[in-house]
Image 1 (cartoon, rainbow, N blue to C red):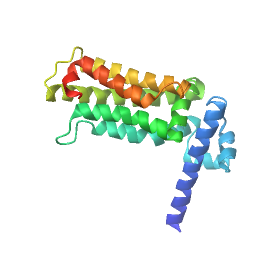
Image 2: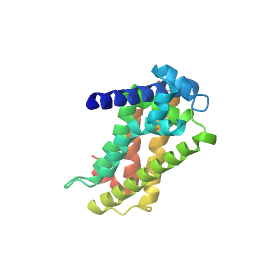
Image 3: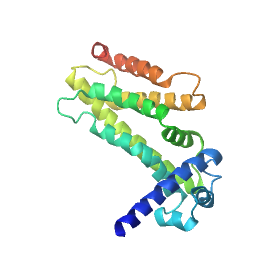
Image 4: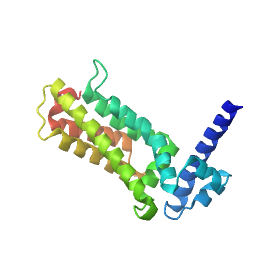
Length: 209
């Protein structure tokens, strides 16, 4: 019975997160109420408060469901014995683009986070979570770029932290432009070429065959 109760609670939590994705996507975060999400999930506001403190907590949980696996992959970059940090950077960045294209849920969450949330009022904690995720990503990318430079005996033309910020901004820009008009270009192939061009500009061109 206890196991079944835990399974039911987990199913309800996922149902609420699925409903939040749909409602936030349709109405935007500021115009969506917890009651809207409860109705979409076929449950009550009480069920939402059982799992989440408030709308910001629900939004962040929705984001983390798709971004945590990506953040965990970034944390593993350059830590595998015998691995090449440069190749791991390339693959991690392209994998983000590929997953977004192939998974409608991930695509919907990225679209909400990019265009349908306002960092005001009760959404301010959402901004803080975004900043934490971005800063964590930059930290891992900086470490991996530095490790790649040491492994390949490459002298970066700028500090690793600056190079990481440029790479992150480029990938983030690709995602946001593609979300505006997915039919305009192939974000995966464009991203692969852009990432390789950027890394070549950092001095890794002889390692990008």
